[in-house]
Image: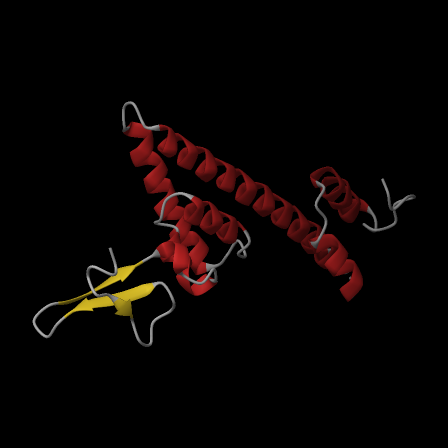
Length: 169
């Protein structure tokens, strides 16, 4: 189709953006599957379908919880999920999109919960006047087990957090 439109790669735009038309009418087409998989294209890619949407949801989940583009993209996905959920008799492709959105939100929610718990541990230590080394701060922030973070938080409130008998516990 791009060939029939005589579309050309748009100068000064990322790969995947094409321009066509003449002096009277000029338009651009974006082929989301050709866009660079980076943060600058995330908001456009989140509006795609199929594999491009799945990749965009994965990229979205990797952004910091307080990233502005993550907040904007999550709102777009909430609206999409709501709109698709209201449609009677969705085709299988849309069911897959709904599942990917839900899975992406679950992953983001889990990451956000872990980050919030880690920050709570650090806050409890700070309030108690306990100095946390850079290595311990990194260890707390990179912890992926909610149960361990909760145990550390309890200990941070009443004792020093990283004095567990076993690092494997």
